[in-house]
Image (tube, rainbow, N blue to C red):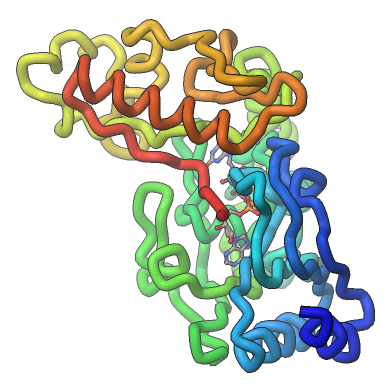
Length: 319
Ligand SMILES: Cc1cc2nc3c(=O)[nH]c(=O)nc-3n(C[C@H](O)[C@H](O)[C@H](O)COP(=O)(O)OP(=O)(O)OC[C@H]3O[C@@H](n4cnc5c(N)ncnc54)[C@H](O)[C@@H]3O)c2cc1C
């Protein structure tokens, strides 16, 4: 092990070992990453994956850590934190953004230039790479709506350029998630709009998040994906008729199932199903990944039992 670290250190002087992932996730949960490297250049990203492959070390790509539950045991392998942060406004209302740019910097740039594209993402944490991989969405908008193309590294470290259609975006998914490809940069197509109106929309979303989401505690956003209305057993659909939303297809927010099953406020250790928003689990201080994982399993079982619905996790589990 020491030998591996020595080889890695020679290639990447800024590499660290035994870095606590709880310091790199919004949940503030997670044990040590065996090796931890911050990359700011695409050459370093490619080199790091290549070297890890040669040394047969598992690699995990980290963005803003806002959709992650990392095991208490940490990760045996190399965590590469992407901090490539070039953000450029081109002619014809096009933005080119590196994967490590934060969504909020991207939103701010589009608003500053009166560009319609990302105002729905006001207050969305994380990086552009993480958002594209999971086709993040909120308030009726989704990342896929404004992507022109994406540059990504495939498993053979080939740099590919994919059009919007080739990205195979779907609800909280994409080709990058299915194939585990690494997003390097994206091109975003915008339209000109009214600066004041766009700013107001973004601000209203930020305000809504502060009011309705438990931002006062560490968390990782929505725990479960919303439920496709068609997947609710016919005999139970009328229970949720007034809860159905179009986002982007007909869904019922999973919070309603959690509330219906009486799970709001349920605690295991220091992890709690939020009293403010039932689709959030919050870290009350010192929560363990195992507490959160148990809460997730418990909620899934109870909801399956009561409604015959299988909740799917939105949070990514790294172990
Ligand atoms: C308070 C709060 C509110 C949230 N609200 C929303 C919301 O409204 N809508 C929504 O969709 N999500 C929401 N989220 C979840 C989260 O912010 C998004 O999923 C975000 O897009 C994740 O980006 P990240 O950079 O933090 O990814 P990370 O958490 O770092 O990683 C998530 C996954 O993406 C992968 N990944 C990261 N970067 C790359 C890359 N460059 N290439 C390939 N894979 C990569 C990681 O390997 C991991 O599997 C919320 C989270 C929080 C904490």
